[in-house]
Length: 267
Image (cartoon, rainbow, N blue to C red; front, side):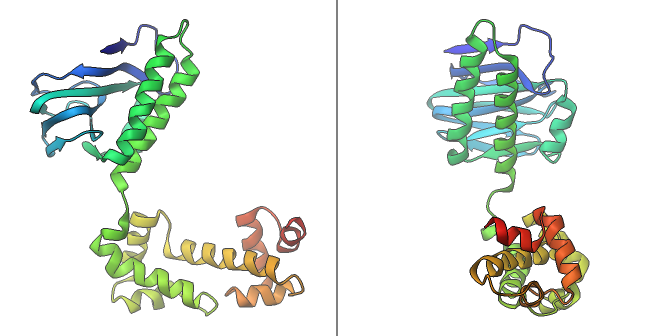
């Protein structure tokens, strides 16, 4: 069993208030929650966590992040429940809700949990050194927060809304990118408004429909520039779905950081 509590003033953007592993978890009840974001992960055995946002059974390598002051309790559901844990603080602690998209709890699957478990081990090792490397520990802490946040999104492929509305548009863009597509025309194909389609793209892909279409066209333009070196820039623009070569050059430079011709020369 190894447990470490912060013993120095908070000076880094993100760091740990506490870290622990190989801890035999007993029954805990916190009607008023805990004052920090805290993360609990099963090493061996299993446990059940009851929260104001739902109940979760944590099997091996599965974890749960709970926001501050959220009512919760937990207890073992196996003969033994051995856990790792981390609590978070830092000078940028107020931005953690934004990183977590204001979710009260985030469940972490076993695959992601293995990576987070290694970060906890590394964090304990860094904290145990004398003197502790605050910057390395802060980077380690931020990496863990990002891994936990990523777990909140998961893969969209099994989401009904993604399958019904987003995936057909992705397929249409990839097969017809060279045509004069518009968001209005694309949204009509799945019988929803352009605004709603864009909201779904932002939800699942973190970009608008137009941004996705433009990015895909730029990727095809790169392909044409490299694989067909004799092709004029105007023809590359047309084949990539841009009707105006000047607009194409401006968009390409903004996205890639160089002009189409310079990109061709570099590659």
